[in-house]
Image (cartoon, rainbow, N blue to C red; front, side):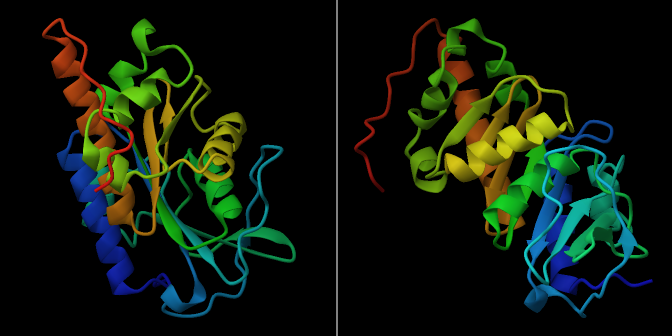
Length: 249
């Protein structure tokens, strides 16, 4: 069964997945992505599907009317997703009965809780990308950046590009089980209530939002670059001088 997705959407998914794989941020089945798609972005209208139970309390059971949530499939590698996005995407929608999975689509990622919680709260079309970014994970382990706001400030204060292209900044979240409702709700609070463009998951990488997959991935790349620069500067034995917060590009 052909998924109700435009070729341009599948091409964007393939390009994003290929880039994540090339960066080495997707060992085994790590990493996931999602798109909240309005009716205008669909190849055809979808009316219902297989009932889908989340099995976790506290998570949203509805999406904006007429929208579908495209999420990378459970256990799929980014390489496989890049090679055949139509085969390795789950499609979820909702109606008066609750969530449903479009027939013929795959089972969704184990990180569905985060994608669903954020998209349902943002309630607008857009994209989320999660990857196991090496230097962001490394910085989340450091006692030197353990104080509230320290990691976020270190990343934003390094380069003007971070301030310009990640205007909402990033929000660090405490360690939580991957794929859990707790992580999903905390991520939604950071990215909706606090307005962050990215959530930094302790020991687990980061998740970034954007209007498109390319923008969300670009924000991850910028934050990871800032983390790498911080690491390299500290390797000299010195502390990087902060960028003036008044700077505007």
